[in-house]
Amino acid sequence: MQAGKNERFMKLLSIFAIIVVTAVVGHIVSIISYNNREHMTRGADSSRESYLLIDKRKDNTSAWLKRGFDLSGQKVDLSGQIFDGALKNRAVDDISDWRLTLRLHGDCFLNNAWCGQVEIHQGVASGAEKVQTLDLRHCDRATIELDYRLEDNDLLIPLTEGDYLVYYPSPTDREVPVQAGGSLEMGMIFYYLGTLDLSDYEITYQYHKSYTEGAGFFLILTLAVLWCAAFFGVMISSYAYRKAMTEMEHRKVGISYMAVIYDFICIVDLVNDDLIQIHGSGLFGQTSGKKLKAADRLKQLFMADIADEYQEKVQDFLDTGTLAGRLDGGSLACQYRSRSGFWYIVRLFAMEQEPGQPLERFIFALRNIDEDWHEMLSLRESRRKEEQAAYGGKEVLRRYSLRQLIAEAEADARASAGGRELKLESDISCELPEFLLGYPGRLRLALSCLALSDILAGAASLKLSLYAKAVEGSCHLLFSMKNDVASAPREGVSGLCLKVAEEIISQFSAELSILGDEDGSEFYFELDQEMCEK
Image (cartoon, rainbow, N blue to C red; front, side, top):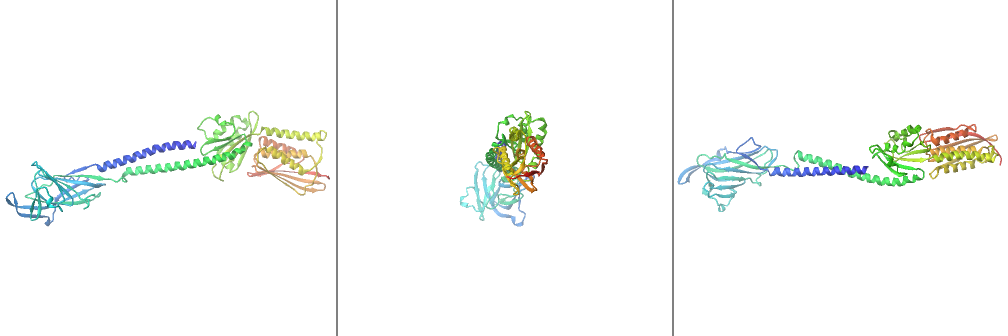
């Protein structure tokens, strides 16, 4: 199920990646288009974000006269004037490049321009146009192809109506770029007679926007960060899932050894809502409703065959809302009878549950114990018949060794456990006489039924302790059987075995008592037996 989720998420990530790449390409194309787009402002249009103002310089040294100038055979006084151009950039982006086209109305002479180069179009109206681009500050006059004059070593390039200039700014003199919100100054010197009209001009310019500016970039950056986070999240999740699956396979191998005890075993994964069958018949095919949670699907495996009087008990037993607290890293068992009359035991084992933490996975194991139930009844009946046969059909007092009887009871317990691993311990008082006089068949059956009840309840270890004290020809005995099963009420075959043991013990005029908590329980009883010689 988790693998399917990861695969679907990877498809979504692929679509997301296509969206991010498309957005990046679109952003790049948009920026390139924006940076290559040409803008134009005509004249001194201050309503535009970028514009150029051309005007005479106002100080006293910026205007002068060239007297006695020979103009077509006449002596005239030419006016010399410095004109300043102030380029204003009020936009949010830098001006990366610009040029000025200045159309002349009237006759004049161009003397100088700074700091860029000037493309001069001379003789346009006459049809004999000459074009040359010059740096008028540093040009070699021998290379000038235009018509020009020298007066007092001043270069004078004549221009008439229809001629025009194109001014290209100098990057080395910081005329480009023009910073956002900034301005720059350029200038020209003209000579003219009377007045000179420099109002017919236009600037053509381009803005420059960085790829890392604007809301579009930050949107793409956010999408890319989200994609990377999601991608690495999926990679980490996939790695963790593969690692978990490897560990799960190892666990499945270990859990499969439980197959010698249980008829059906599966892992219930509450995190991924999955059931992983380890051993048993293919009951998963009997479930319905794919949207059901794993625990609910598990109930469908066997709830229909449970007798009505045990339905509520099993429902409560499998309640995942309280299961974590009840398991607490250990195990729980529940016995029930099927509609067909067979007895079963269900045991739940916690998997790697930390104390006080939510339960993520547990093992569900099911075993048919109907045969054990019948064996217990047969054991009881056979013991009764053996006693009667040995003593003429009646059970009579006889001499016996209690140590040997306890050894036989331990053998009975191991036989009842089948192939299941069971830890057995015994602690016998050193004051116990070698022989006693009593009913050994009853006593062995009582101890065997107590052990069988514990085994069916899920005990993994049993400890039988015997304390003895001789008093005036009789021996007072205290029997104690401890296990590692919580002291919950025993039901089913386990409860029936406990009742049989209690009934037998009552025949000795004794009473079976119980102590215990969630970690384990202890059954004990006391009786007196006569001592006898060898």
